[in-house]
Image (cartoon, rainbow, N blue to C red; front, side, top):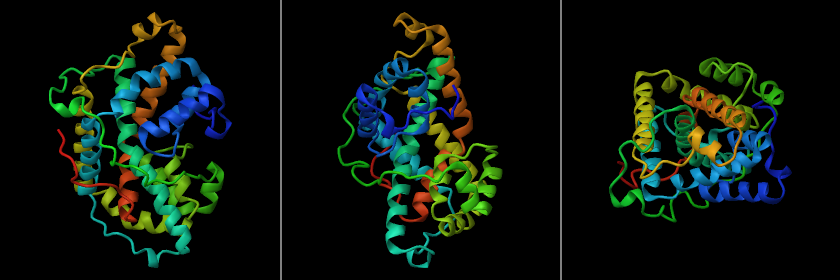
Amino acid sequence: MDPTIQLLAHEATGWRAGTYDDIERTLRAPLVNSVWRVAMAHEPALFRHVWHQLKPVFETRRFGAFSVAYRDTVCSGLDADELDPAALEAAPAEVTELRGQLATFDIVAPRLAVAFETCDRLLNGGDVASTPGEDRAATAPMPAWLDADRGRPVTLAGMDEAAERAPEAVAAVSDYHDLGAMLPSIHRCLAQWPAVFDALWTRLEPSFTSTAYGAATDEAAALVDAFVRGLPTAPALRPEQLQAAGFEAEAVDALADHFAGFTENAGDVLPTLVAYADTVGAAGERDALSFP
């Protein structure tokens, strides 16, 4: 699937728009990430089927507890005080908008980590629900208050525009993440406020290259593994199950490659979403639920 071909949210109509609405409601964030937009553009019927298999993963108390633990774990590896909003080179209204958008990224980070890992494993022969959760939280509903109504819709600078507006920060993060030509949405978002982007990177870069942060992100990855292995049941997303549901093998293979690519390329990016939010005081609940 060509990642440059996407069905953007404002272009979606009919059941495609309804699916996007459901993604935002289920994930509790006003954002339809590129992993979904690309799949919808290339294989809409298959993606709709996949989404409705995956959706229940995010609707349990166990997932809520995981999402809090993921955030706590990433933040435990940071050695950076919160930036003083008054010291940022941005107007108060801009800082408010920035914090709201970073809160949205903070919300989706653990959700994307689980989505990538679950779909990649099921589509490519990995272990899911190999040690099913037996406690009440495994099937109890997601707490209504968790991550509710705190993010703002995300806006992005264009790929070239981001590099022009914040050249030093974009070059630094591209080198750190070994991104090549593609620039993740979080950095295109931050590029709208170049001085803030520079300040955030200056504050966080020593943490990102520290032993403590490396250990914390390894632990966060282990939490993702524990969550996926502990699902009460596995979504019916094995290739043979999708083909039995009427989808062509070629389309299923393309989707498998799609999720494998996101899993490989986003593993070290997703924790930084939490770090950026935490550094501007926009991270969500901490120590609120226990996982596992």
